[in-house]
Image (cartoon, rainbow, N blue to C red; front, side, top):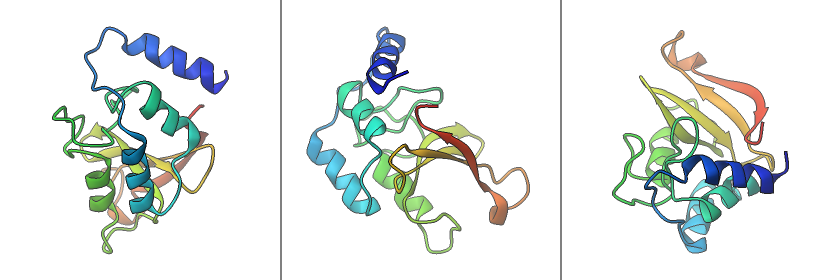
Amino acid sequence: MTDDELIAAVRERVAHQDLPGPPSVDAVRAVEMLVGQPMPPLLRRLYLEVANGGFGPWEVVSLTDTGDWFSDCADLAEAYTEFADPESPLPPGIVPVMDRGGAMWALIDFRTADGQMWDWDPNLCCMEHALAPLGQSLAE
């Protein structure tokens, strides 16, 4: 599937939902500045062409606070800042995007153009081993 086909499929899947409208390009840039990396192009397009959060299998966190929280965080900057704590083993550039509940998250690597996905599950073992690569991109 191409990125265009993926975006069309996501739009169709969420068409019946009352999701927040897309954020501004400036809001995308602000998150990129905070993370220190450009947003993977497909994720950027999903935010700018579909909605400011709420899409995806576990409802992607909004890029800006829309009042519709799709996690315990108001927006992506808050989610990233909480995970980027110096005490956290999360490497810079890996951004939590989907709260799966029970302290589990799906994360995306801004350092990779295809948006490699990571899993965060501190319930499996311990905090030191909570982060694991999924070996798949956002598109996959």
